[in-house]
Length: 191
Image (cartoon, rainbow, N blue to C red; front, top):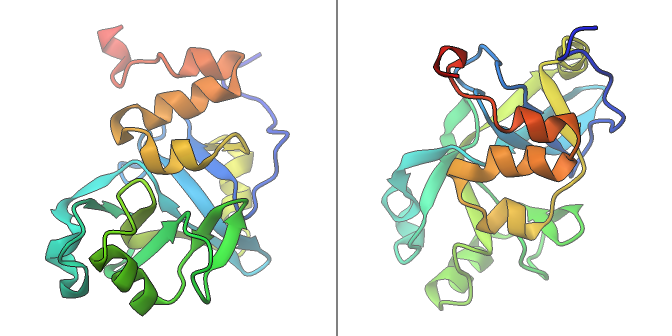
């Protein structure tokens, strides 16, 4: 039996994580964690949670000039757009993708909350671009064992965990053989 072959028991959907396999060859997704916001017959999309960009949010959007955090690379699609997930209740037009974690919402309200210091980097993440799959594409990648689907997440993992250790932490939260995966070196020749 191939050590890496397995069937995932968790199905993809909004509020689930896609954790990349240790040796995923696509550099856009090497050792990444993606929070799925949508998954249906038309396709899927989400945001890479652990890939900081070189830009600060304040440098990208004048309206967020007081925000002290980095923007993240949400994925390779439409990197000229800014999207966000947050754990702020009561933001109009936001979509709850998991208990206490929201996608989008009234941007003017978000700007006001940032400007008045009511929102910190532990409450919201901003993304340049997103990760997207056409109809059936993600399901095919799952059959090829490219991703591990996880429902082991909370606001601490999503908003407070250092991006450099997030991939390992997500695997350790799954336990069992996934804890072993978390220790694999980036370059197996260095083992």
